Amino acid sequence: MLRCVQKQSLIRPFISSQRVLQKRTLASISQDLENAYDVVIIGGGVAGVTLACSLASRPSMRNSRIALVEAMDLTGVRKWEPKQDNYSNRVVSLTPGSMGFFDQIGITKHMALDRANGYRDMQVWDGVTDARIHLDSALLKGYGADKNVKENTIAYMVENLNVQSAALKRLEECRAQGYQVDLIQQVKVAEIEDSRQDTVLGQQKPEEGLDLHDWPTVHLDNGRKLKARLLIGADGINSPVRNFANIDSLGWDYDAQGVVATLKLDPTRPNNTAWQRFLPTGPIAMLPLSEGYASMVWSTTPAIAKALKNVSSTDFCNLVNAAFRMSHVDLKYLYKQIDTKSFKSACNIAEEYNWRESVAKKSLNDEQVLDREFSLPPEIVQVQDKSRASFPFRLRNAESYVAERVALVGDAAHATHPLAGQGMNQGLLDVECLSQLLEKGTTEGQDIGSIHLLRQYASERYLRNIMMISSCDKLHRLFSTDATPVTWARSLGLNAVNSNGFLKAEIMKYAMGIEYTGEFRH
Image (cartoon, rainbow, N blue to C red; front, side, top):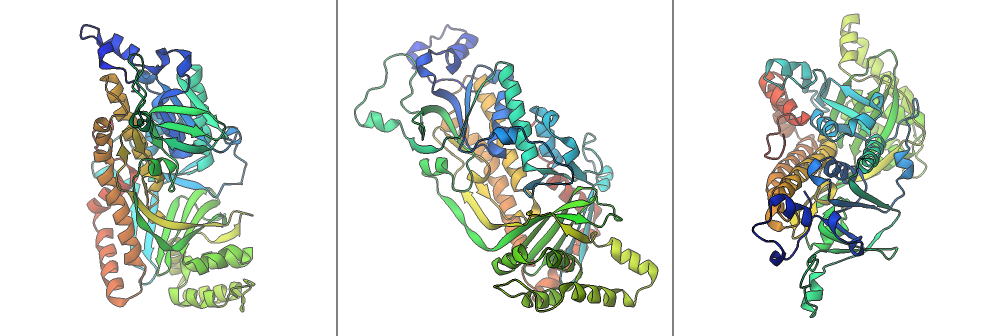
């Protein structure tokens, strides 16, 4: 994929294409250019390390020089080992499409697969009207899904550390196989310089050899300078690479936060379903990590989020149970009982919850009680110590994903509301598309930093990301109200979708990443 830009006068028409590719590859130049790279990736998060793996896993990239720059020390991440019955609160819901991509680039074999928990169905319902949609992956069997897709797997719950650790181990394996990938860690980017300014100031381009005059220069805080044929920003929502390229990021901050926690569940109930209830203050979701454990994401107002992080563990568990089982009116009453300074409740939340549960079951016979119980998630019995945290919700989309010798992936390019759990998967689709395009460009002898090549990546990903961002934003607005006309309309829609097997199958295929037909995906 990655090759050098040399002066055209050095390339003779009669030289074979193989010879040209070899001469235009950075690995073949002298040691005085040891800080020149075909690709420099800024950011060692999931998007950055998987992109480095994807590039280093392609035979056509064997002679290309790749640098991955990360401010943190990734040694501990690489050595991560799972602890029994203890889970990180930073987890991601990976689609079968994303897991298939990991398998292609050699990451899956390094993952702790017993901590990649697949779930087969989802229960999603309206917290005001109780209108519901049930998505069961077994339905795909009758609607033309790819036979290679594992039945009963809508998505896999995986800890971020599991993915990062596996990707770093895969990078080590690629280096041992002769691929030139440098992990430059514990250094920050001090500045990114546009080297073309030197030419403007009067410096001349070299008459022969490698022409680096338009390659970005990355200044690290340890004094080292990296020259990049292609500079890729995988450096998050406040991307320095995006700022260097003068690409604006458009969007807004939601007046909402997500509270995450690791939960221990009622051991008598099976745990292979994802649950999501849309409340007027935001959706709450419970996603299965393993038998008896689940990850929770509760989207709510900043004030309620602060209370949820600070109430006692017992009150927190009861509030989570209430959020899945009680009416939104009763929930609002419980919120008001919590003191905003001491975070102690004026009432006994456990008693309030248990009383309301007994009232809800009072008029039901045994069979109806059982049906009601299995239409709701398992009750939470404990929250893992120190697993509660919160983060703000933002919507962002860069005006462009590319500039001359610059490309953006993941959160550097876009950020969306997490209610659909697709943010990480969209970033991985960026990674897959870009790496396949760069491989194509390298094989064809193109300049991989050229805007003419990079625009193909932008045209492939921009619209698809806009569609996902827009859909999540509209769902957020649609369910963030209890106004009667709106609740009536959305309940009608949910019930209509739930009764249409074909439509549910299409929704699942899109969410699972198995309907993707982009040009660069094989």
